[in-house]
Length: 311
Image (cartoon, rainbow, N blue to C red):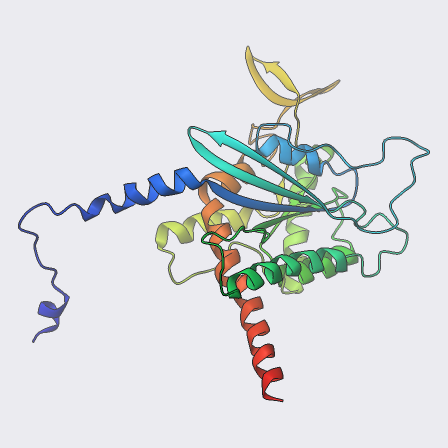
């Protein structure tokens, strides 16, 4: 038999209907809803809560930063989790936001990343335990972190040594998306130079960031991912305030020098970050967590169990 004959597809004589499977899947998924877990990591005062609220166009979390001079500073990194369900055009999204107040705020920040890494691994461990139980749930609640937004202070100089260490640790266990916080404090030239310097440092230290290359990606996917990688780290500005610009209400900030429209790509890259997280890569972030980071954790744990059972 020729290769052409083997590869040829039979022609259907009449309509069967299995092409409706996509609408069947969509109907089930819409009923169940979607889960998306985001962690934010960065020093206090970088606008982490504000950016999350800006991305999802609703007030979801309050700032955990110090607001009073007599308020004591945190001595350890704390983990705070907030869950909200938001609905858009009939699509239900259960959003779990994990904040890490106290990170990088101490005089001695040695090992300040350990509670963060432990929390991420604990979610993998919890999912694995539920997966291995004899009478497991039909749908296991997924608390694994799908995306970690890493906030970089807009110093205009370079990454801090602690940033490099933490980025290397985080990229081993989670999808990391770095952002330059409050980028309106930099001029356009300063921002370009700062981003270029950060890219060089990440390349030098071999820090692998999401999105990753995949054999399943086609030319369109590769082109999109390359455009994202060119933008990383995203220089962003967040704002929950609305202002009027040319008769149109937008989210932004107004100061004595003028107006910063967070959704104007000439002002910052917020719109590119939002589109990346919600409109083009939301499902891929979830799948990559399961197929790469969780699978790596799972295989290591099962191999360790196998080896301990042999002794």
